[in-house]
Image 1 (cartoon, helix red, strand yellow):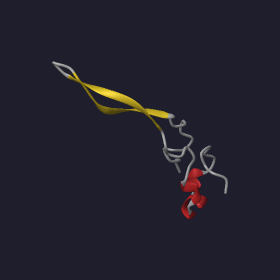
Image 2 (spheres, rainbow, N blue to C red):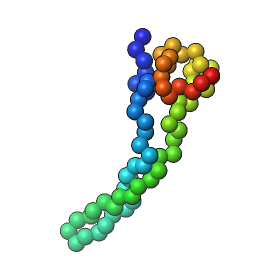
Image 3 (cartoon, rainbow, N blue to C red):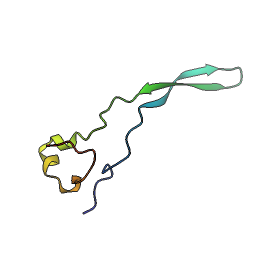
Image 4 (cartoon, rainbow, N blue to C red):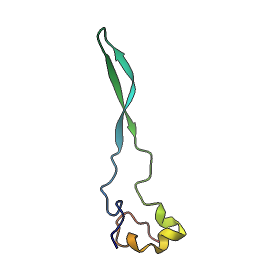
Length: 67
């Protein structure tokens, strides 16, 4: 059985660029970007569930939390 796409994935980035309005020019609107921190957990939260504790496709994943 193939592992999930999240299996041993690279770590998430710590910040993301998102649009925060526009700079108004006479001829065009230029997007204004700002950096926001990544707030989700890097670890796998699926392994805390009953299904995740017994899922064979998660075996050996570096993001799996210890039981």
